Each structure stands twice: as C-alpha cells, then as structure tokens.
Amino acid sequence: MKKIICLLLAVVLCTAALVGCGNTNSGKKELPATISQEEWADAKQFVTLSTGIKMAYVEMGNPDGPVVILQHGMTDNSRSWSMAAPYFAAAGYHVYLPDLRGMGKSDAPDGFYTPFTYATDMKAFFDAMGIDKATLVGHSLGSYTVQCFSVMFPERCDKIVLVSSLPLKGYQDAALMPAYAAYVEPLAEDGHPSDAFMDNWYATILHEEEFAGVFDTFLANMKKEAQVLSKKAWKNIMLGLVAADMTELYSQIDDSIPVLILHGDDDTMAPTQYQEELCNIFHVDANSYVNYVGIGHNIQFEMPHQCANDILTWLETGSLPK
Image (tube, rainbow, N blue to C red):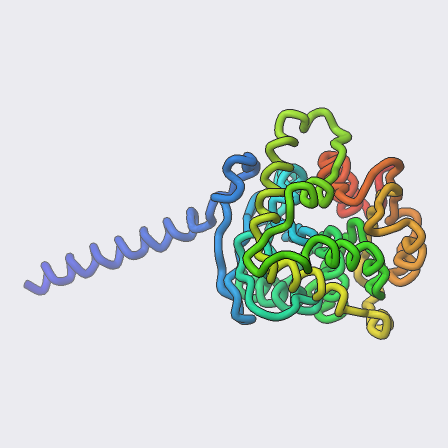
C-alpha cells in the first residue's frame, strides 16, 4: 500500500511540475498585430479601475515589448489610432489603446471629465494592468491627459508624445464653446448631435492612398460611435476640458522626460500660433517638433503611416526622420 501511495504521489507531483512548466512557457498571451475596422469594436477588453469605472481597451503587439499607450481625442475612442497602431505592434511594442471615460465602451458616470480625471484613470489603468512605465501618446484631448499625467505621475512616464495639442490654458475654448453652444446644449436630454454636425466634427482629408480601401469604413464608424454618446456624455467631456487649466502647474514639469510634439499647420482646433509656447513649456527643440504642411487636426487619421513612422523613429533615435 505504501508503494502505491508513493507512486500516486510521485505522479501527482510530476503532473503538477509539468503543468507549471507549461504555464511558464505558454502563459504569455498572444496579441494581434493587426485588427480590421470590422473587428475593432469586438476586440475591446474590459478592466475595472480603482477610480470606479470599467474601462474598455484594445491590446496589440508584443506582450514582452516596451509599453506604448495611444490615447484618443474628444468624443473619439480607441479606433482613432486603429490605422496607425499596427506599425507600433510591428516595431515590437506592447500597445494599449484605451477608451477614455465617457467615450467608446467605457463607463460614463455623472460629472465633468477633466484631463486630470482622465490622468487619474490612466494611473489606475497602469496599476490594474501591472504597467510600471510607458510611453504615452495623446491626440488632442488625449494630449491634455498626457500633459496632466506627466506632471501628476512623472515616475510612470518613459517618453511622451503630444499630437495636435495646445498649452492647457483655455486656448481651446475659442473653438470648443461655440460648437457646444450651437450643437450640444440645445439637444433634448435623450438627443444626439445631428448628422450634419458629425460630418463637420470629423471633416478629415486622407493624405495616404494606401488607406483608401479602409478609410471610409473607419470614418463612418468613428462618426457613429461618437454620435451615439448621450448628450450628458458630450457635455461632461466638452465642459470638463473647459474647466481644466495647467497654467500654474507647468512649473512642476519633469524636464528629464523626453517630449515629441506633432502638429498640422491646417489645424483649426490647435492653432499654430500656440505651438512655440507649447514647445517652450516642454523644452522641445527642432529635433522633436514637426509642423506638417497642409495637415489638419487628425494627424493619425490623415496620414497614419507617416505619423506612426515619425513617432517610432523619434522613440528609437531621439530625433525625427531627416
């Protein structure tokens, strides 16, 4: 009997060891390198954050690679970076694309959502996903979130990239408040922005023919996913940005964090006149700033390949392509 028991015990221990070895070798999940526009919404996963919201996100690339987080703009969602994200995945990065609070499939609780709110959510996302440090890339509203994050949690920043950004001093109000007053405030409580407004909100010209086959599908989904947001969500997003000001906080910037700024000279939401001030705030020189001629507010929509390539070159070399 003792021999039988010992034999059974040995089998159990060997089996456990083999299972353990199997988990060690295959425990890392495989992540997609590309996701089609048709599959994007269903590719989202969910995590409950310590800030009380359930956040949706897409994950791509190399699970062992350095982490880069691509953050979208106002009323957008992770799809905003969907045409550019595969280049980061192909370069070996572990790519996260979150839906910020109130947008996409993430929770939309009561109250204004300021960039400080989003930055706090992002820190909670880092904690929930076990991310120590990352490169944060933010477009428009996402860039304000990145600015706030870099001041609030500098130890979690490897590098930061500001796309279509401004100093967070109320400069965006000149374009934002008239749009809110004309198209959002008059809506019924259960209403949604009109088709005409959505066409104007997402007026974008594609500058890279390689995306011609997917661009219309991409843009139609972007419009639909933003239009379905409630009036309350639009209000909380837009007025939350108006409520934020970093004027007195820029003195707290950690100068050791490398910063890249990408801007289009045809951008009416983030006018060129404020770019010199933004560069001075973040101590950005000519090697880390580009003003694309003839490009508007949505750089990663208009030229996804060049946008991604310029960011990736800068991440690798510290300078933009010559």
